[in-house]
Image (cartoon, rainbow, N blue to C red):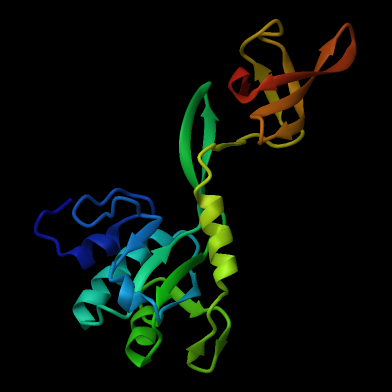
Length: 215
């Protein structure tokens, strides 16, 4: 990466999810632009539609626009709804973030002509959701609280990379090296049922994601 690049240039070339050390927030899924709680009392949450895959970039780009347009005190937070999931690849478990509403972000702001223009013209943004003319409609506190509670869930769920009917190979347990097809997937438990041929009959075998590999 060119160290002489400006933040705007870095963002323009970055891929969604790439770690941009020069400007990346501690939590890129919940960016705080202004922590003045008193000023934020008049702010509301709004849903903004973005190009899918551009959510993180929009959140970072908006930070730059707030500073360049001198509108601090009008846009306070950006939330990208996401959940922790455990992804299993080649028998290895890794915790990842998965967006639960791809193409949508939530912004806490005081809407006026300047703040509306800053968000609406940010690269990657397509529209406010629920707009009436130039004035977007805020979402309820209840909806925001529900999403934040969901994001705060500490126990991550498993993310399956398998599909029903897919041919797989068992890599651990008493049926190691057996081939079969995926019959059922339980992401909550990180398990799946594989149909294997035993004594000429298809028999379901329950396995953990880490005990199965794609062929």
